[in-house]
Length: 420
Image (cartoon, rainbow, N blue to C red; front, top):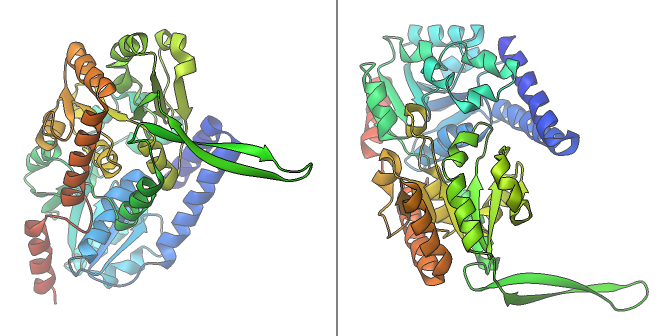
């Protein structure tokens, strides 16, 4: 019942924030994904159990499942409010719980898994299992009362602290170190891009001309009183678009860390415009430049990639706190997939991924952000070179097809052999 209230609260908040048409469409997509997670479950080796169908579930369950399938595992994904959840216990040997809330049905499932000697793995891509940390975030402050219900305790806290659970998977080395403090064996399984997304990006880039100094425009012509034709042509591009993709609520403070930098850039470079995706609340000082700020709310995956591809530079700022430090580098991989250069906060995760000045830029101080963004604004060849290098690294390290987790795969294989 608690989970139902949370989901109703999220649906209401989505419709309130995005309107009946757009928000209602998202709710319908959720319902479709929910029923799909029930009917498409097939018995096998590994079952991922998630709390929802958002980006976290896509990256940490569906894409992870695709990665494991490429290495010979039989994997399915379902949601924790699947009415047939308990019956799935006997159909798998390894159960990976991602962001699941403690409910009567999950408690029964876990007890049944233990009775039959199954393996339980705790998975997370955020520090949401640390309730004190999540309740201090801007994200939590922006939630409705229904949404806050899920954070009365750390998400997955009871699974993480269960002595029966010996293994965790997570998205970054930073979170891995924290999980090791719970005396767990931890595997870092980075967030991967699905093969469908890779092919989608390739098609987008085939038709995109933003990486050149031209853009595509169209014009409608009247041929008769009742007929019209539309012609397409290329014109020189004078606009440099800098994009920030917040994704979810609660990134206002992240963006605010570089708002003064962006104001300096907008003043110096009249050709610059800012593209903002997601429910971001801008500071009043940005109002002066509202005509050069393009807004977009939720976009399905294909449109999301098209929006990234239409940018010349991607931003990845973060607050400097423990919770933000745990964020993964998916902004780098998504931008790299579309050959768009990124300027990211200089923290442990991005510094471990980006070779500064080679396949992206790292920045810490306001002046460093300004200087590196200015370089990219002024130098189209630099943007192209950085973007292509990021693309190579993304395809090499961040796709489900080209994954590098042999230690993890070997652990899973050994456990499956023990239970045959």
